[in-house]
Image (cartoon, rainbow, N blue to C red):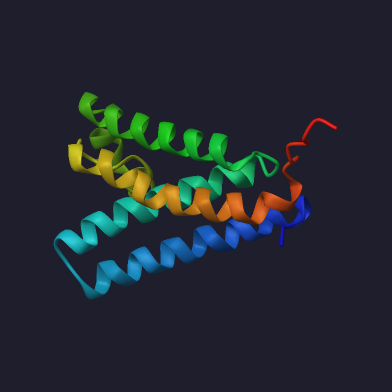
Length: 135
């Protein structure tokens, strides 16, 4: 089974909304580590959906690499204090950029991206060229 390229963008919007809904539900029903770590992983999942929304024909591994690079860049930017200053003025900035660096987040981003890369890889399998044996 594969997904037509024309359907990728609407599907990624739905996926991002679902990831956000799950994250907000966990935030309301829980607190502590579950809230923090699941939020980090689901944020990375939303970024992956965003990458595919912007580039619907991108293959799984590059999409995963772009999503992780973005997440890690945002996390590293938190070391500068700029995201914290922007987050103090805007809820949207707080949701996208976070406030402070947490080295644990760096490890949780792949938890949100790798399963999506695997699912994308499996769905994309019919479109990948197969290796031909020399005849």
